[in-house]
Image 1 (cartoon, rainbow, N blue to C red):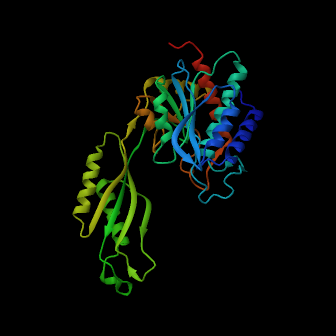
Image 2: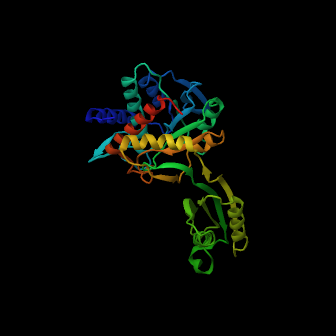
Image 3: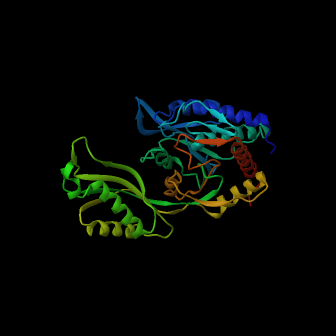
Length: 364
Protein backbone atom coordinates (compact mmCIF):
# COMPACT_ATOMS: atom_id res chain seq x y z
CA UNK A 1 0.00 0.00 0.00
CA UNK A 2 1.43 3.34 -1.05
CA UNK A 3 0.90 5.83 1.76
CA UNK A 4 0.93 9.35 0.30
CA UNK A 5 1.67 12.61 2.10
CA UNK A 6 -2.05 13.34 1.88
CA UNK A 7 -2.83 10.19 3.86
CA UNK A 8 -0.23 11.07 6.50
CA UNK A 9 -1.71 14.57 6.82
CA UNK A 10 -5.13 13.01 7.27
CA UNK A 11 -3.80 10.88 10.14
CA UNK A 12 -2.13 13.90 11.75
CA UNK A 13 -5.43 15.79 11.52
CA UNK A 14 -7.16 12.86 13.24
CA UNK A 15 -4.52 12.81 15.95
CA UNK A 16 -4.94 16.55 16.48
CA UNK A 17 -8.65 16.02 17.06
CA UNK A 18 -8.13 13.06 19.39
CA UNK A 19 -5.52 14.88 21.47
CA UNK A 20 -7.82 17.91 21.77
CA UNK A 21 -10.40 15.76 23.57
CA UNK A 22 -9.32 15.26 27.21
CA UNK A 23 -9.95 11.64 28.20
CA UNK A 24 -8.03 11.14 31.43
CA UNK A 25 -11.26 11.01 33.48
CA UNK A 26 -14.42 11.23 31.39
CA UNK A 27 -14.15 9.28 28.13
CA UNK A 28 -17.68 9.86 26.83
CA UNK A 29 -16.67 12.69 24.47
CA UNK A 30 -13.91 10.74 22.76
CA UNK A 31 -16.13 7.65 22.48
CA UNK A 32 -18.87 9.78 20.89
CA UNK A 33 -16.35 11.19 18.44
CA UNK A 34 -15.11 7.73 17.43
CA UNK A 35 -18.69 6.51 16.94
CA UNK A 36 -19.39 9.53 14.71
CA UNK A 37 -16.06 9.35 12.86
CA UNK A 38 -16.38 5.63 12.10
CA UNK A 39 -20.10 5.82 11.35
CA UNK A 40 -19.81 3.12 8.69
CA UNK A 41 -19.18 0.62 11.50
CA UNK A 42 -22.27 -0.28 13.61
CA UNK A 43 -20.72 0.23 17.04
CA UNK A 44 -22.63 -0.42 20.25
CA UNK A 45 -22.11 1.06 23.69
CA UNK A 46 -21.23 -1.30 26.51
CA UNK A 47 -21.66 0.53 29.80
CA UNK A 48 -19.27 -0.19 32.66
CA UNK A 49 -19.89 0.28 36.41
CA UNK A 50 -18.21 3.68 36.59
CA UNK A 51 -19.47 7.25 36.51
CA UNK A 52 -17.45 10.43 36.01
CA UNK A 53 -19.20 13.74 36.71
CA UNK A 54 -22.52 11.94 36.54
CA UNK A 55 -21.75 10.38 33.14
CA UNK A 56 -21.80 6.61 32.79
CA UNK A 57 -18.59 5.43 31.15
CA UNK A 58 -18.73 2.88 28.34
CA UNK A 59 -16.78 0.79 25.88
CA UNK A 60 -17.40 1.23 22.16
CA UNK A 61 -17.64 -2.22 20.59
CA UNK A 62 -18.19 -3.91 17.25
CA UNK A 63 -18.30 -7.67 17.80
CA UNK A 64 -19.94 -9.54 14.90
CA UNK A 65 -20.10 -13.27 15.48
CA UNK A 66 -18.18 -14.05 12.28
CA UNK A 67 -15.18 -11.80 13.16
CA UNK A 68 -13.17 -13.73 15.79
CA UNK A 69 -10.08 -11.48 15.59
CA UNK A 70 -10.29 -8.35 17.71
CA UNK A 71 -8.37 -5.10 17.54
CA UNK A 72 -8.51 -3.49 20.96
CA UNK A 73 -7.09 -0.33 22.44
CA UNK A 74 -7.97 2.03 25.27
CA UNK A 75 -9.12 5.60 24.77
CA UNK A 76 -8.33 6.89 28.25
CA UNK A 77 -4.99 8.54 29.03
CA UNK A 78 -3.11 9.54 32.13
CA UNK A 79 -3.70 13.13 33.34
CA UNK A 80 -1.64 16.03 31.96
CA UNK A 81 0.69 15.81 35.00
CA UNK A 82 3.37 18.40 34.11
CA UNK A 83 2.91 18.50 30.33
CA UNK A 84 2.41 22.02 28.95
CA UNK A 85 -0.54 22.48 26.58
CA UNK A 86 -1.32 18.74 26.78
CA UNK A 87 -4.41 18.91 24.56
CA UNK A 88 -2.81 20.86 21.73
CA UNK A 89 -0.87 18.77 19.22
CA UNK A 90 2.58 20.24 18.69
CA UNK A 91 5.07 19.30 15.99
CA UNK A 92 8.83 19.36 16.58
CA UNK A 93 10.59 18.12 13.46
CA UNK A 94 9.02 14.68 12.92
CA UNK A 95 7.64 14.34 16.47
CA UNK A 96 3.96 14.89 17.25
CA UNK A 97 3.72 15.82 20.94
CA UNK A 98 0.67 15.85 23.21
CA UNK A 99 -1.03 13.84 25.92
CA UNK A 100 -1.91 10.40 24.61
CA UNK A 101 0.02 10.64 21.33
CA UNK A 102 1.96 7.48 22.13
CA UNK A 103 -0.50 5.86 24.53
CA UNK A 104 -2.61 5.37 22.45
CA UNK A 105 -4.15 8.15 20.36
CA UNK A 106 -1.48 8.05 17.67
CA UNK A 107 -2.28 4.37 17.21
CA UNK A 108 -6.02 5.12 17.15
CA UNK A 109 -5.49 7.79 14.47
CA UNK A 110 -3.54 5.25 12.40
CA UNK A 111 -6.31 2.68 12.88
CA UNK A 112 -8.99 5.16 11.76
CA UNK A 113 -7.11 5.97 8.55
CA UNK A 114 -6.35 2.29 7.85
CA UNK A 115 -10.06 1.47 8.25
CA UNK A 116 -10.96 4.33 5.90
CA UNK A 117 -8.49 3.09 3.29
CA UNK A 118 -9.89 -0.41 3.52
CA UNK A 119 -13.46 0.83 2.99
CA UNK A 120 -12.36 2.98 0.03
CA UNK A 121 -10.54 0.10 -1.68
CA UNK A 122 -13.00 -2.65 -0.73
CA UNK A 123 -16.39 -0.89 -0.60
CA UNK A 124 -18.31 -4.17 -0.84
CA UNK A 125 -16.39 -5.85 1.98
CA UNK A 126 -17.19 -5.75 5.67
CA UNK A 127 -14.50 -4.63 8.09
CA UNK A 128 -12.73 -7.98 8.65
CA UNK A 129 -12.11 -7.59 12.40
CA UNK A 130 -14.00 -6.97 15.59
CA UNK A 131 -13.18 -3.69 17.34
CA UNK A 132 -13.23 -2.55 20.95
CA UNK A 133 -12.32 0.89 22.24
CA UNK A 134 -12.15 0.28 25.97
CA UNK A 135 -11.90 2.70 28.90
CA UNK A 136 -10.42 2.73 32.42
CA UNK A 137 -7.18 1.00 31.35
CA UNK A 138 -4.97 3.55 33.07
CA UNK A 139 -6.53 2.70 36.44
CA UNK A 140 -5.91 -0.36 38.60
CA UNK A 141 -9.55 -1.37 38.13
CA UNK A 142 -9.30 -1.74 34.31
CA UNK A 143 -13.08 -2.07 34.22
CA UNK A 144 -13.33 -1.57 30.46
CA UNK A 145 -11.55 -4.71 29.30
CA UNK A 146 -12.90 -6.64 32.28
CA UNK A 147 -16.47 -5.81 31.28
CA UNK A 148 -15.65 -6.59 27.63
CA UNK A 149 -15.12 -10.24 28.56
CA UNK A 150 -18.85 -10.59 29.22
CA UNK A 151 -19.70 -10.09 25.54
CA UNK A 152 -16.55 -11.41 23.84
CA UNK A 153 -17.59 -15.05 23.45
CA UNK A 154 -16.91 -14.94 19.71
CA UNK A 155 -13.35 -13.58 20.08
CA UNK A 156 -10.47 -16.04 19.81
CA UNK A 157 -7.54 -13.72 19.03
CA UNK A 158 -6.64 -10.07 19.51
CA UNK A 159 -4.15 -7.35 18.69
CA UNK A 160 -3.92 -4.95 21.63
CA UNK A 161 -2.58 -1.60 20.43
CA UNK A 162 0.01 -0.17 22.84
CA UNK A 163 3.40 1.54 22.44
CA UNK A 164 5.95 -1.27 21.94
CA UNK A 165 8.51 0.47 19.68
CA UNK A 166 7.05 -1.58 16.84
CA UNK A 167 7.96 -4.91 18.40
CA UNK A 168 5.39 -7.70 18.32
CA UNK A 169 5.05 -8.60 21.99
CA UNK A 170 3.84 -12.15 22.49
CA UNK A 171 4.54 -12.10 26.23
CA UNK A 172 3.92 -9.69 29.08
CA UNK A 173 6.12 -9.09 32.11
CA UNK A 174 4.67 -9.83 35.54
CA UNK A 175 4.82 -7.40 38.45
CA UNK A 176 4.66 -7.62 42.22
CA UNK A 177 3.51 -4.30 43.67
CA UNK A 178 3.76 -3.92 47.42
CA UNK A 179 3.77 -1.40 50.25
CA UNK A 180 6.59 -1.10 52.78
CA UNK A 181 5.99 0.55 56.14
CA UNK A 182 9.20 1.11 58.15
CA UNK A 183 8.48 1.93 61.80
CA UNK A 184 11.10 3.47 64.13
CA UNK A 185 11.04 5.46 67.40
CA UNK A 186 10.57 9.20 66.98
CA UNK A 187 12.75 11.82 68.66
CA UNK A 188 13.45 15.55 68.82
CA UNK A 189 15.06 16.45 65.52
CA UNK A 190 18.06 18.13 67.13
CA UNK A 191 19.11 14.68 68.42
CA UNK A 192 18.66 13.00 65.03
CA UNK A 193 22.07 11.27 65.12
CA UNK A 194 20.93 9.19 68.14
CA UNK A 195 18.03 7.54 66.26
CA UNK A 196 17.53 5.79 62.95
CA UNK A 197 15.55 7.87 60.48
CA UNK A 198 12.78 5.71 58.95
CA UNK A 199 13.29 7.29 55.51
CA UNK A 200 16.96 6.28 55.50
CA UNK A 201 16.04 2.82 56.80
CA UNK A 202 13.49 2.44 54.02
CA UNK A 203 16.13 3.10 51.36
CA UNK A 204 18.51 0.65 53.05
CA UNK A 205 15.75 -1.95 53.04
CA UNK A 206 15.11 -1.37 49.34
CA UNK A 207 18.81 -1.97 48.68
CA UNK A 208 18.52 -5.23 50.64
CA UNK A 209 15.59 -6.26 48.46
CA UNK A 210 17.51 -5.54 45.26
CA UNK A 211 20.46 -7.64 46.42
CA UNK A 212 18.28 -10.51 47.62
CA UNK A 213 16.00 -10.66 44.58
CA UNK A 214 18.78 -9.72 42.14
CA UNK A 215 16.70 -7.08 40.39
CA UNK A 216 15.83 -3.39 40.57
CA UNK A 217 13.03 -2.04 42.73
CA UNK A 218 10.81 0.66 41.26
CA UNK A 219 9.72 3.28 43.82
CA UNK A 220 6.25 4.47 42.80
CA UNK A 221 5.52 6.60 45.85
CA UNK A 222 7.44 7.60 49.00
CA UNK A 223 5.95 9.19 52.11
CA UNK A 224 7.80 10.28 55.24
CA UNK A 225 8.47 13.36 57.33
CA UNK A 226 6.17 16.02 58.68
CA UNK A 227 6.12 19.73 59.44
CA UNK A 228 7.10 19.21 63.09
CA UNK A 229 10.70 19.43 64.30
CA UNK A 230 10.88 15.75 65.12
CA UNK A 231 12.12 12.58 63.46
CA UNK A 232 9.00 10.89 62.00
CA UNK A 233 7.77 7.55 63.29
CA UNK A 234 7.57 5.82 59.95
CA UNK A 235 8.20 5.85 56.21
CA UNK A 236 5.87 4.32 53.63
CA UNK A 237 6.96 3.19 50.20
CA UNK A 238 4.83 1.93 47.32
CA UNK A 239 7.17 -0.19 45.22
CA UNK A 240 7.23 -2.93 42.62
CA UNK A 241 9.54 -5.54 41.17
CA UNK A 242 9.29 -7.37 37.88
CA UNK A 243 8.22 -11.01 37.78
CA UNK A 244 10.05 -13.03 35.14
CA UNK A 245 9.01 -16.04 33.08
CA UNK A 246 8.51 -19.27 35.05
CA UNK A 247 9.02 -17.41 38.33
CA UNK A 248 7.01 -18.31 41.42
CA UNK A 249 5.39 -15.21 42.93
CA UNK A 250 5.07 -17.02 46.26
CA UNK A 251 8.85 -17.26 46.37
CA UNK A 252 9.18 -13.48 45.90
CA UNK A 253 6.64 -12.85 48.64
CA UNK A 254 8.40 -15.24 51.01
CA UNK A 255 11.78 -13.55 50.48
CA UNK A 256 10.30 -10.10 51.12
CA UNK A 257 8.67 -11.24 54.34
CA UNK A 258 11.87 -12.89 55.55
CA UNK A 259 13.86 -9.72 54.88
CA UNK A 260 11.32 -7.69 56.83
CA UNK A 261 11.22 -10.18 59.72
CA UNK A 262 15.00 -10.19 60.10
CA UNK A 263 15.39 -6.41 59.96
CA UNK A 264 16.37 -4.59 63.17
CA UNK A 265 13.30 -2.33 62.92
CA UNK A 266 9.66 -3.22 62.52
CA UNK A 267 8.80 -3.43 58.84
CA UNK A 268 5.37 -4.23 57.46
CA UNK A 269 5.03 -5.66 53.95
CA UNK A 270 1.66 -5.74 52.19
CA UNK A 271 1.00 -6.88 48.60
CA UNK A 272 -1.03 -4.34 46.59
CA UNK A 273 -1.26 -5.74 43.06
CA UNK A 274 0.20 -8.98 41.75
CA UNK A 275 0.40 -9.96 38.07
CA UNK A 276 1.96 -13.15 36.75
CA UNK A 277 4.23 -13.26 33.71
CA UNK A 278 1.98 -14.12 30.78
CA UNK A 279 2.52 -15.97 27.51
CA UNK A 280 -0.18 -14.14 25.59
CA UNK A 281 -0.06 -15.32 22.00
CA UNK A 282 -0.34 -18.41 19.88
CA UNK A 283 1.12 -19.21 16.48
CA UNK A 284 -1.94 -18.04 14.52
CA UNK A 285 -2.12 -14.41 15.65
CA UNK A 286 1.67 -14.10 15.75
CA UNK A 287 2.02 -15.35 12.18
CA UNK A 288 -0.83 -13.23 10.82
CA UNK A 289 0.61 -10.01 12.20
CA UNK A 290 4.15 -11.01 11.19
CA UNK A 291 3.06 -11.61 7.60
CA UNK A 292 1.20 -8.29 7.53
CA UNK A 293 4.25 -6.51 8.95
CA UNK A 294 6.65 -8.04 6.43
CA UNK A 295 4.29 -7.40 3.53
CA UNK A 296 3.89 -3.74 4.57
CA UNK A 297 7.48 -2.86 5.46
CA UNK A 298 9.48 -5.41 3.43
CA UNK A 299 11.32 -6.68 6.50
CA UNK A 300 10.74 -9.15 9.28
CA UNK A 301 9.43 -7.82 12.60
CA UNK A 302 11.25 -7.82 15.91
CA UNK A 303 9.67 -9.59 18.85
CA UNK A 304 9.65 -8.63 22.50
CA UNK A 305 8.11 -8.79 25.95
CA UNK A 306 5.69 -6.04 26.95
CA UNK A 307 7.07 -4.71 30.26
CA UNK A 308 3.81 -3.02 31.30
CA UNK A 309 0.37 -4.29 32.25
CA UNK A 310 -2.12 -4.03 29.37
CA UNK A 311 -5.71 -4.99 28.62
CA UNK A 312 -4.28 -8.20 27.17
CA UNK A 313 -4.11 -9.42 30.78
CA UNK A 314 -7.89 -9.40 31.03
CA UNK A 315 -8.30 -10.96 27.57
CA UNK A 316 -5.97 -13.73 28.78
CA UNK A 317 -8.56 -14.63 31.44
CA UNK A 318 -10.94 -15.65 28.66
CA UNK A 319 -8.22 -17.57 26.80
CA UNK A 320 -8.13 -14.97 24.03
CA UNK A 321 -4.71 -15.25 22.40
CA UNK A 322 -3.20 -11.81 22.00
CA UNK A 323 -0.22 -9.84 20.80
CA UNK A 324 0.57 -6.35 22.08
CA UNK A 325 1.81 -4.09 19.31
CA UNK A 326 2.26 -0.49 18.25
CA UNK A 327 4.86 1.96 16.98
CA UNK A 328 5.75 4.66 19.53
CA UNK A 329 7.97 5.04 22.56
CA UNK A 330 6.76 3.42 25.78
CA UNK A 331 9.43 5.06 27.92
CA UNK A 332 8.21 8.53 26.93
CA UNK A 333 4.51 7.78 27.44
CA UNK A 334 2.98 9.26 30.63
CA UNK A 335 5.63 12.04 30.58
CA UNK A 336 5.81 15.62 29.31
CA UNK A 337 7.84 14.24 26.35
CA UNK A 338 5.11 11.90 25.06
CA UNK A 339 5.15 11.74 21.26
CA UNK A 340 4.71 9.65 18.15
CA UNK A 341 6.57 10.30 14.90
CA UNK A 342 5.10 10.75 11.44
CA UNK A 343 7.15 7.73 10.31
CA UNK A 344 5.62 5.60 13.06
CA UNK A 345 2.12 6.64 12.03
CA UNK A 346 2.91 5.74 8.42
CA UNK A 347 4.18 2.31 9.47
CA UNK A 348 1.10 1.66 11.61
CA UNK A 349 -1.26 2.55 8.77
CA UNK A 350 0.61 0.27 6.36
CA UNK A 351 0.66 -2.68 8.75
CA UNK A 352 -2.98 -2.39 9.83
CA UNK A 353 -4.14 -2.06 6.22
CA UNK A 354 -1.99 -5.04 5.28
CA UNK A 355 -3.52 -7.01 8.15
CA UNK A 356 -7.06 -6.25 6.97
CA UNK A 357 -6.15 -7.19 3.40
CA UNK A 358 -4.79 -10.55 4.50
CA UNK A 359 -7.92 -11.36 6.50
CA UNK A 360 -10.23 -11.01 3.49
CA UNK A 361 -8.20 -13.62 1.61
CA UNK A 362 -9.19 -17.30 1.96
CA UNK A 363 -7.58 -18.62 5.13
CA UNK A 364 -5.96 -22.10 5.17
